[in-house]
Image 1 (cartoon, rainbow, N blue to C red):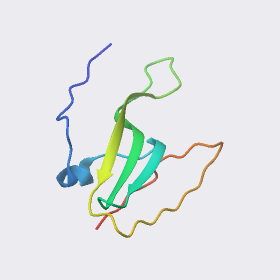
Image 2 (tube, rainbow, N blue to C red):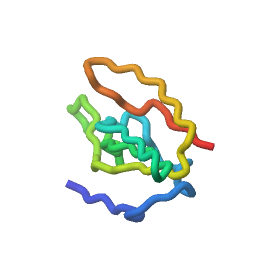
Image 3 (cartoon, rainbow, N blue to C red):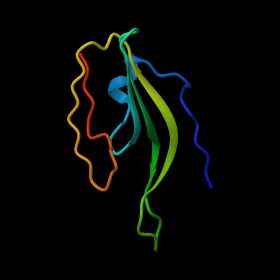
Image 4 (cartoon, one colour):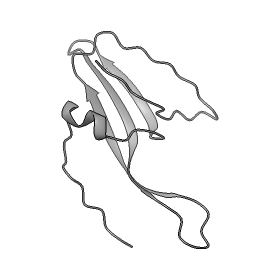
Length: 94
């Protein structure tokens, strides 16, 4: 099994455009109105592993993470859930 080298432990808004969030499972969403923060707990996919010969399914290098959005005061959420699962389709800020 190959290893995975994490580029850095803490990512910031400067990294937002290079972070992949597609298909990440969301486990909780919390708003901290006192600090104007919005937090997402999700399983972040760090690496997609394509199937080898005679394999069918993709595999993933996944880790639980908390994304903290600071100065969040006008949060809009559009959710669809199939079989009780919530996955990130896209995130935007600005």
